[in-house]
Amino acid sequence: MITGSCLCGAVRYQVDGPLARMTHCHCSMCRKVHGAAFATYATGGTSRFAWIAGEDAITHFESSPGVDRAFCRHCGSVVPSRFADTLALPAGNLDGDPGVRPSAHIFTAQAAPWHRIADELPQHEDWDYQSERSAVARPPLGAPSPGVLRGSCLCGAVAFEVTGPIVRAHNCFCSRCRKGRSAAHASNAFTAMDDVRFTRGEDRSTLFKLPEARFFSTVFCSSCGSGVPRKDPARNIAVIPMAALDDDPRRGVDSNIFVSSAAPWYPAPRDRPCFDGPAV
Image (cartoon, rainbow, N blue to C red; front, side):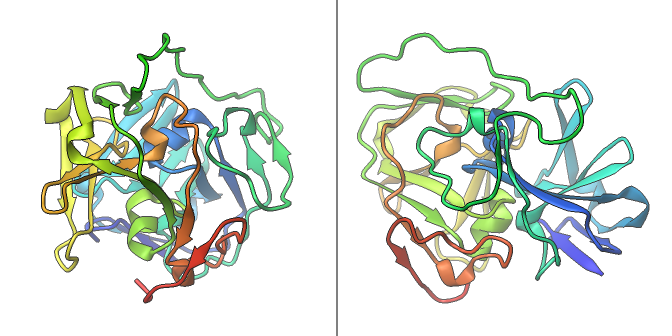
């Protein structure tokens, strides 16, 4: 039996395995809604799936015709969705080892410019399956103002600008980040708090503070669940999900952190400095 849950634990589910397939998706929509460099999904039959708790806590957003993206309205974690007779499970909120490993990277033509694919799995620029289905590209942006990075959520309700330098950026593999982003890791950039300005929709941003954590929190759009910047007055910083950026920051992440907490299906790549930490 395979189980999973959102970050806050309100939504819990189980699948009477095994799961059929797992892929890393780099499409612009998955990156936005997960707030991560890529999303990892496993698939299985819907007849073997059951909600244990929290189905009433789920919000749905139709990101393109026929594509439903579900998330917990309390903490923003992406949760399983059904597409016809197929179940799509975000691997980042699966508990333990699901017994399946990624087989490919898909939609790599839309991969984030700041992310390097570091493994040797097959890469497909478009849809990997025997189907004509393709990702829906987001509309192009106009030219940015000098020294300004623009960002937004998937549905466009929340938008922001970063006017100061990104001072550091990390891929975090801790279990909290994996659950919060429902992905292999979070990719977060850090800047001064006053260097992030919301241009619309700040009132649509929902904050979830993990009760047992000193600082750990997530902020997400209440309409589509996408990760958006979090301002932390206590430390005078802003934490920006790099996938929320619409402009190329022209820098990648500096390091991988909490690598000892990485999921069994995606060990931390050693293509940049890696730091262990207490299992979280």
